[in-house]
Length: 287
Image (tube, rainbow, N blue to C red; front, top):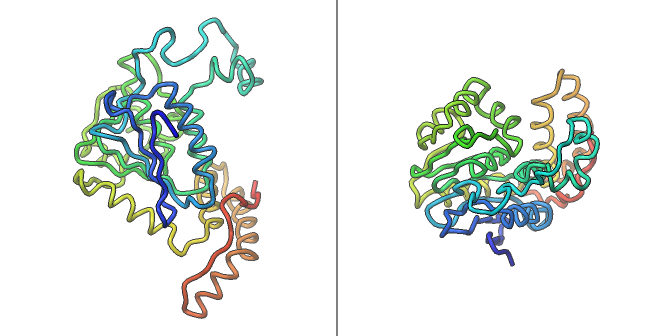
């Protein structure tokens, strides 16, 4: 189905997305970019999918951008020279949509918008886009053999894939700046100490731990409540004042209270497992 990825969904609705260019250490190219975008905009939005675990094939997670391509290796149109005002006004239209917009950022925006848990199982080296794509995922578990690098400074470019939004929120501005300035490749232990990853695992234990975590998130859980909670936490952690959280919390609480919340309360009172019927594809609007 895909050239650079594999996709599998088990009976519990846990999807495994594997970056699959093992001979190239799963280096990111424009084909992988298109396929990742398609997965997160279509396959992952199927209501049969409850959570997504992302990992790499072979010994790497993703060795970063494949720099062997001819021309502009990032696929950008060097004939363009938009002002910030021009770009903001028409960023999603041609020629800017393909010629200027950061490819990795399109993918991380799609990951961020998915109303389901996304877990990175970083099995080996994750450098450049291989590191920044994981920032839009909700949790990161890493193998003890993982190596993570925000190495853009070595190439004369800047952090991309919306990482300037995600990274400081995950590790704090001081740590984010140090890692970006130094452009060092971090050991798994350094990534854990900096709170970039949730936990470290021996290589053979990484995927089982990720699957166990994913199942704990979705078993006997409402897909609607889960999807809305993801929206609330990401949105309101960056809100200017708590009133914004109150307004969106109120709408989310109202809609869940007359939906899956009724079944949840009944199941609690009757001491049984809930049978939720809400769908992540039909979230009520709260903003």
